[in-house]
Amino acid sequence: MTLSYKPQGVCVRNIQFDLAGDVVSNLVFEGGCDGNLKALVVLLEGKSADEIIAMFKGQTCGKKPTSCMDQLAIALEETREEKA
Image (cartoon, rainbow, N blue to C red; front, side, top):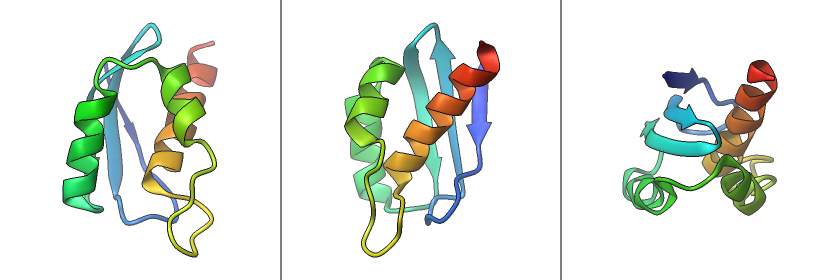
């Protein structure tokens, strides 16, 4: 099942991903820093939500209180809460 998340406070307009159990796949960022996000998508494919949350929760971008990757961590946390 493909899930969609509208991030807040970042350049990315939408984050889509599949979450099978705890494994993230088919991650897509719409907008944002294209090259950086494409590279991160490759690195994160098949990683667990726990790993991604541990790596990126609380990361900021410049003066912003959040980042695209922090927003991904939030999306994963919220998705798991909704499934529980």
